[in-house]
Amino acid sequence: MYEHQIELDGQVWNVTYTKDAQPPSELTVSGRLFYHSQGMPAIAGATIRFSAGEAAYECATDADGNYTITLPPGDYVTSLTMPDAYIGRGKMAVNTTDAAILAGWSVNPYPIPMVQFLSGDVSEYYGHLSSNDAGVIQYYFLYEQWPAGLTPPEYVHSWASLSIDTNGNVDVNAPHQLSLSHNEEGLDIAVRASGDFNGSGVNI
Image 1 (cartoon, rainbow, N blue to C red):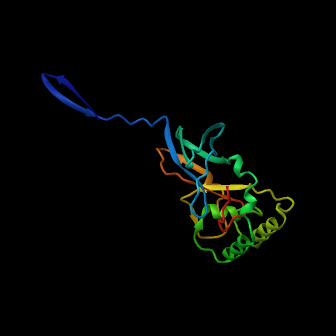
Image 2: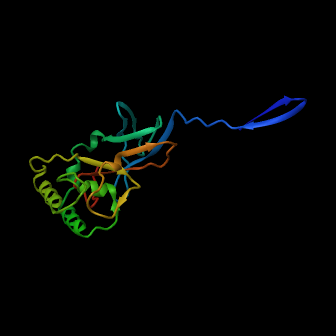
Image 3: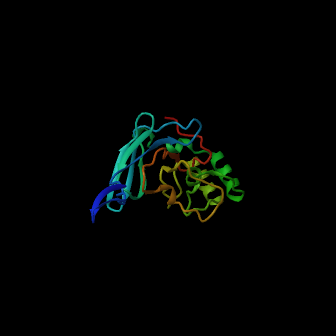
């Protein structure tokens, strides 16, 4: 708000006016990256990428899994590059219990973290869990490879605050999207290995 005095016909007038606030040119996003299992262990040395069209911005997590990045306002899609120590370790988190729990959840859903849902969506990646996904996970546990034609990512991630309690027609892109219009603190990111539906974790 601004005030200004003008003199007109011998009288002094106070004029008050406001100026529209300009949107900030840069905003700060921060949070913590962790593996979604017991204890929520931090993932250090990961690279988080925020993409907006052809523009992309990256930051790395520190020893405690924390990240901070400065971005222009806009709509972003996140992607993740895991540290070298995690590559190939995802298979260690997959077992027969994952398949059994997923099969039960698919017919009787209850609230679970979104990252857990994504970890189970291994057969078609279309936002619906079924006995097919359970079978694929069981196959992976037995043979340490996915069935022919299936190539799930080794790890999946989601905003940690997201959860789901229904099965089917799930937007599997939403957990990676961010519409940024103000500073965001505490935007934690949860990670799981594909197939690790019970969250047994990766031993690093």
